[in-house]
Length: 240
Image (cartoon, rainbow, N blue to C red; front, side):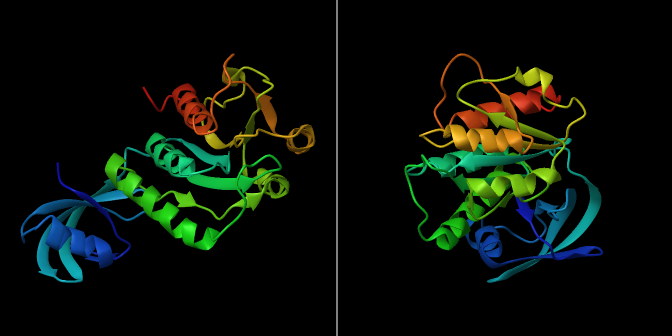
């Protein structure tokens, strides 16, 4: 199968790959002129690309066959994930991208074990992890990883969504009753290791979030968003 690369530099029947991807294609993969790759414009469209020239910092290609990427789900899901300790957020990012999330937004809450530190630098690494996962699994967009919010800022974002699903450790409504079958814009909210304080949970509910459950077991903070996203994609028909 041809390798997959994202580029915004597609003009008519030509395209360019630059920077680290050009180095990877030319030096690591040792690509040759005439070889085929799949190009993605990051807006949900794929193209057939044929390499026409290889330079140290740039690969030029001819392109044809523009078509919608079939890997993008109809549900546009944003994962709001409580900021976990160690490298658990990297796992959440990778798997959320693989499962079809459009955006991942970490947030800090009262019982988070970690505190904000060098988040701008971390975000650059998180964006690279998301991009690599998108390439590997054939996504048609580059999912966005936002800088962390405070939990008090979440309600400001809620007007963007058709469904607000709050995965609360105390349970709630059955998930299948809360997921729009037609997809739409859906927010998933899961907590960090310490969960949510009663005040935080009530503030989310008062802002319109629907408490839902994930079964009788307490899932780890890195498991909950992955399980929730997989369940939502199943209920909207994306994993069929």
